[in-house]
Amino acid sequence: MSRPSRFRRGAELALGALTTALAAALIWAVLDLYLAGRALRETDPAAVIYSREAVAARLPLPLLLLGLWLGALVLALAARPGKRPRPAPAQAAPAQAKAPSRREALLRGGLLGLALLLVLLGVLNGGLRDVLIKAANICTECIGLG
Image 1 (tube, rainbow, N blue to C red):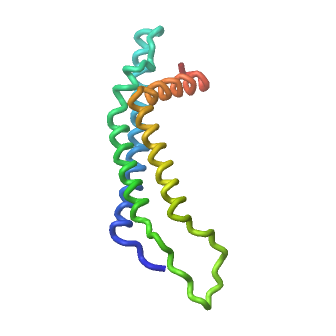
Image 2: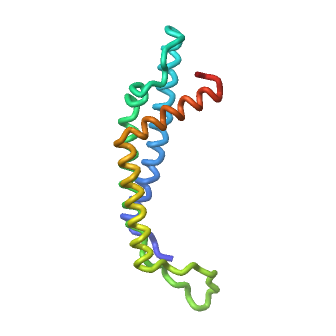
Image 3: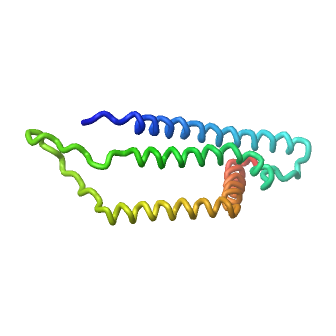
């Protein structure tokens, strides 16, 4: 088996680091929202804690990291080797799936591009904010915080 190229290895390391940073940023944003809401609830018990504005104020860093993560994912996928080395004839090779044809690969790439476009359009349309607010409300009601 051949060693991965430096570019591929770097792209995979960047993807791993950005995944960790994105998870940390999301955890920080949720904790910050919760603690700020808790402090607000102490002063005004009828206050709306999880408003669109409160959630939107905490989204810029996670959204930036999400964009960087998607870029690193594309680079990591682009750096994957096209053909796998064949095992030596003396080795018993396990049954491997047939490699996709060029047409299948183009179809997969087109569907991935379409999915990313639709996700981007949903984010720009405000859908991300709505889903995050609904999820926060459902979660805090379920465990009895809100």
